[in-house]
Image: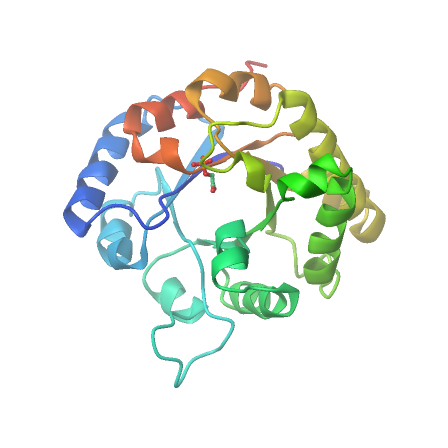
Amino acid sequence: MRKKLVAGNWKMNMTFQEGIELINKLLNQAQNIPQDVELLIAPPYIHTSEAARLLKDGAIYLGAQNCSQFDGGAYTGEISARMLRSCGVSHVILGHSERRAYFHEDSDMLKDKLSQALHNQLTPILCCGEQLEERTSDNHFKTITKQLENVLFHFSPEELQTLIIAYEPVWAIGTGKTASPEQAQEMHAHIRQLVNNKFGQSFAENITILYGGSCKPSNAKELFAKPDVDGGLIGGASLKPDDFMAIAKSFPHK
Ligand code: PGA
């Protein structure tokens, strides 16, 4: 079922103590969020076990920012999907543009990561997004199509039942320059059409597509009012509990 979701990507921020403090602040405010809006945080790995303990009543889902493409074994420094699952993680962000750019994650690797997530019952949040030059040269639709096709089209709609997609234009991430609601809507509609063509209408109608890139309390309402924008993947503003919760209250009333 298509969900309204606001997910916080903490990136490499927060010491252990700061993170726990932030989780407690979020928990204090979580009951003020409309029933049909889901909240999720993806802290760094070091917070995972304690976060799972604090979030065990399910008011806020716990995600990870990445997982290994391998099952397990001699891969120093890596964390597997199975390990995350064993700590109480339910979601994993895959293919964030920072991972694509700084850690050379390509479609083949992301296909394996997605497979690991699915086999270990983690809900994948697959990110896609174009660079500024791709948009200015009018290649943004082509870029997103390619990024999604190259990873998702190896799977069946049944396997991808839980998939969430996050559209995050790279030029909008951490820059304060958000996509306009119209730009977000036209890309979200494009993504929905793409999965419709490949996986069918009911899959397309039910998939949750998040917008990410400088989403804040001041622009979330306009973005979430668009028919194909089902929520947000929030970076900077997810570190400020009041902002994160204000974003979660920005969905239009039915
Ligand atoms: P931002 O990051 O909200 O700080 O722009 C979004 C993201 O990278 O997920």
